[in-house]
Length: 569
Image (cartoon, rainbow, N blue to C red):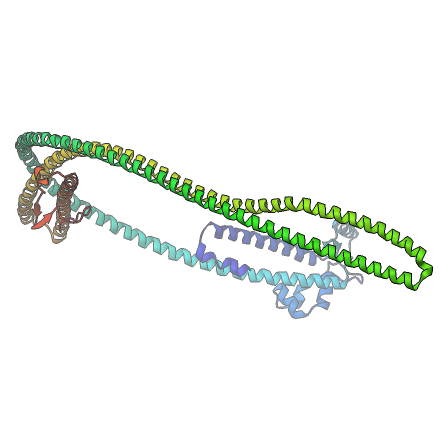
């Protein structure tokens, strides 16, 4: 990590390098101070082990001789061992030695005094000290290499600075020479500008005089055109009045035909309604007669069927009576003992028979009484069903008739509304026609005046610019021949003159494009008005205007599709 950190010095060479260098130096100083303290504590001659040996003697006996020699940087291992202090013979000196020994405080390592440390702890401490010593030596060598690198980069940068200063001095001399040449060119161009301003004033005075003359001519032409247009206006008003009268007659005829059509439609629909009503009344009478006949036949069939049922019932009763009578006769002949009981049964049977006869008579009477209402009810049901079917058909027919009538009324209202809309459109079209005619006349005058004036100005400008170009070229040749400029200045001057000529040529092209656009707009407006005149039945010969025709450089202007104007090449 340390090597990668310090390898960035040659690239950055800034304030971060100085900060890292200061931090590394402070760390080295702190490590050196700690190492000195540890070495002094280790080399303390007052330290003794339990058996009376000093700390250095213990290290000497435990550690290898080569490692101690490398640690202390000595060739003789015995030199690393400090001799213990010799005992003094005099008592006073011995007392002083005891006092000084008592005054010294014991050395503490990792919170444990050296006197209390074991052999393993001392060995571990010695190993740590050796590792720190090796690391500090490596860092010292690394910092020496970094210092050499910084010195070499400093020398290289100093050399580059001297070279750049020499280049700056050369550039200053070149700038002074260029400034002198620039001042000379400025003087030359000032003389040219004076000549150009003089010529410009002359051109302006000539153009003013020409503009005054052209303005007078345009005013005279405008007066003539105005008188002609007033005559055309009066003629158009007369034609417009005639068209209004004809339109009024047409509208009256349309109203008359419209009323006749409405009355005809109304009479047709009324006639159709009467025919439909008569047809369905005839169908209703035929259906009623048919239903009456069917009802009578069904009643006759029901009466015959009921009479047959009554006769059948009477025959069955008579047969049953004869069977009972024969049965009782057989019983009386065969079993005399049961006569009394049978007589009683006969009496009972007679009573029952009488009751049955009464019930039968009542049922027959009830049947006769209910047969006629039932028949009437059935007939009424059938009749109502038929009437219901006819009613639905009549209802559907009436609905369709009402729908057709409603559609006819809506068509009538739509025709009325369209008629009113057409009248309003006709009035609006008349107003638009008048307004368009006024605007067109005004626009024609304005465009014609502007186009004529612009054409005249552009042609004069083109001629003046051509003359000016020839003069400028002659002056340029004279100036170049008289100035005796060096080739570089001559190329600069010619390049600038070419730029000026290019700008003038682009201005000429823009003016040609503007001329083409004005001619095109005038011709498009003229064609539009001719189309409107043709639409309203006015002859185009009475307009009195002609399309503008202008050619620049042999190319016809003002022609092409509507809305597209191409600049002449």
